[in-house]
Length: 305
Image (tube, rainbow, N blue to C red; front, side):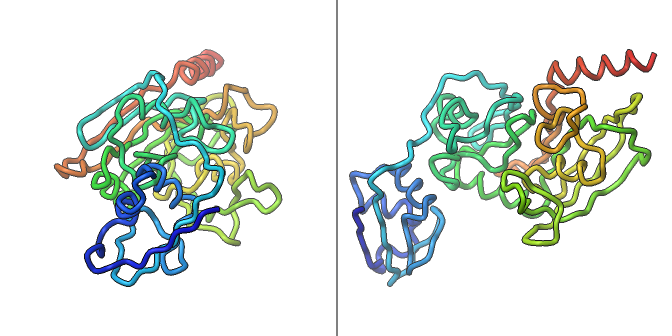
């Protein structure tokens, strides 16, 4: 493992660490450098940093080059359902079954692979495996995602998420008749200590999680609800409805085994409202329900006749 060390001089202060290392290491692409930062192979004053870290005079920068590097995300000619696009942002309707970005076991056929083929100018803040990705939805959840084409747009959208001014609405089909027309589930979510692949409502090592819901339609033994996320925790809607004993239909991880089994959870991100990072104009986007979701709702309506 090769190791390189630099002390930042005044002339290089205020530069982003990824851009400076790209200048200092001519044989390394900026994408490769961002991946090394993401893997914590770059330390500043002995501490882990992000790609947008601004260097300061006197900083000690250490770069280790592991012998084996994870592959960068590669462009793939995969069709995209693009709802909106301009020079700053892109809003895409992700299909059920597609992983958002490459990771161990899913290096290909992800949304990021498709985005890289469609447009090469994506923000680099989240590194080479998640270019442009500001927020995520689960593999088997369909619906709208905002993608940043440059770092300025990325920072603006990320701030909206942090400030809770980006509005995300979902439709979910849940098991059971939910009697309340409106409600809020306010329960912290953290990693399940018994199963590290799952999340759970817990007070231990958890973060605030708030889901607002509204009943849209009731069937014989199921309910269609609209969910409005105030926070964006991993698996939040799925965990919250399992917690109140109304799990989402078709959810292989948090659902009941005797539910109607679709190809994954019946959860769709149907509406996204944000402010454009350049114009500050409020924009609302909608995505229709997938055919499978629509078919199951029609089946349930027929059972009510």
